[in-house]
Image (cartoon, rainbow, N blue to C red):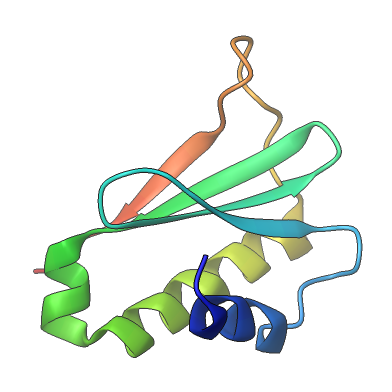
Length: 89
């Protein structure tokens, strides 16, 4: 994860018990986890191109923070997490 993305994650001020990481995948995939719960949000390359990388990632982090505040979903039986996708219109 590059320093700029780490800085954006830190500025989003997630609750202390929520970990946000950048995971491999197409575009930028952010994963918020809390215990055995979690949610991934994929920002597609088209979304980054159309909305700009910074604004698209900011919107993704806002969505993840809202999901964390409401309670992240349980992990799937295979250990994977639900994934939301932010696409370009």
